[in-house]
Length: 197
Image 1 (tube, rainbow, N blue to C red):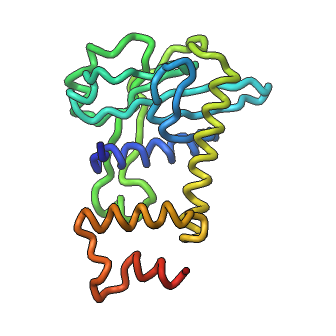
Image 2 (cartoon, rainbow, N blue to C red; image 1 turned 135 degrees about the horizontal axis):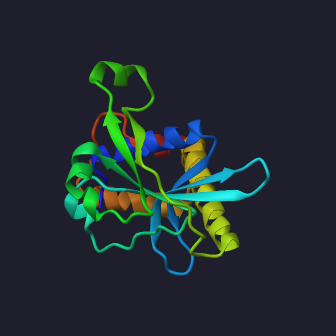
Image 3 (cartoon, one colour; image 1 turned 60 degrees about the vertical axis):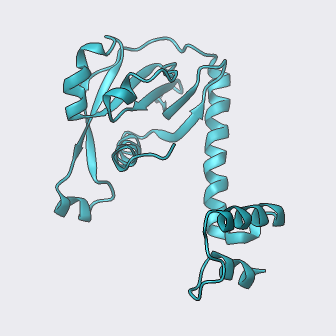
């Protein structure tokens, strides 16, 4: 299912929020031991070398919040990232040990001048808990997800040369079936692919 613009805006704000706090962050991390997929996982290394994992679940509607999808609150600190209107509707349903970050959108003029369209503010601090999964396995999941993101970035940077011929053919076939016109007179992805080949 594709993400709503509000979800993307909150994820973007969360990314910058975590960077400002000196944390390494990655989205959509598969948790060990069948604990689902966390929307965002952040890693903070303290001065003494100990590690803290923070799990974030982004929710934008009541139905999203009440979804039967597994919550992956396995970190030392666990938070919901919510728009303010949703928080007002569901705040009594949030467990006492789970924290809440409120998404506050910037007005349109300010959002044109910043990298994010809004900011996050803690309205409820999470209580520290012991990890619910093995730390080494969690670190392994974290690193695999970081590698996935690096791989995506390299593919964008390097263009089509990192894709196999089979992958390219499969994608062009899929696009043709969905109505993508490989023969239109504008410069399209098909043209770019043939130029690079």
